[in-house]
Length: 377
Image (cartoon, rainbow, N blue to C red; front, side):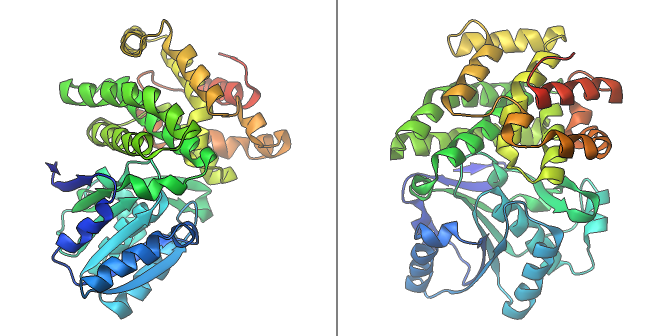
């Protein structure tokens, strides 16, 4: 199935689809251990060897991919000279693979150019295949790559249509080894994508259907994926998180993601976890806008509940998500000592698309509400 230029393959065992592709020399970008431990790298290597393909594995990507990790990967690509790049793993590996492919093929580019440009009008001929192992980021469907810039203590969403993969392979079997906390956190990342997109002022009919469908599906199958971990629920969540990504790829997100990039860049907690903790507070704040309230009421009706924000809180509880940044583990001393930078950075990125326009004074109230676990706005 082809969706906005991506060949989209989604069923248990679909990793075998690699054999249908035209490429013969693959550079595999992955994390440092999980894809080896769960047998996915050996499985992929066997598939490529059976198809008489050459490959090189780069496993230097951490939980939050950095510019230096990307540059290291590009340097290895220059030696190997692949005709395709595979991003295999969570959103971090896929995000890194996107930037590596672009910088390898266009050495005249650098991070400063990409950071300043919303679209780089150049072609990409090297193949790009995204194979997610977690169900949340939706990076396999989007033009965005989130990279950490240590010198600025911030994560930045780089954007260009050149980052959209040629192929997205969603094999639920790869997700079976996900630990429960990863299922919860990445699943709530997907939920945040769907809900922030649905409450965005730019929402249109096509994305509305995708968002609502993703919200309904995640409320039904994410708890089952967390508690049972069966292939049916894992594949369903894998699919619904991709639906949410298709929607926000076109519309955008909101303040919860702006806050997440700021907190994640400073304190290095998982993106999905930060999104999950912040989501009820952000929705409570944004519900002062009549259109947001109306849309949240529609979502509540779609999932058969009376109050959508309370339903998110209940889902977080079922998934053992902390109720505040303080409970999450950020000490008050650390939070306050870095607070001015965190506050400034939270005003950037997706916060600019928030349905309620934010001032620094209002963001201060929201951040402290999420940190202390009580409404201060």
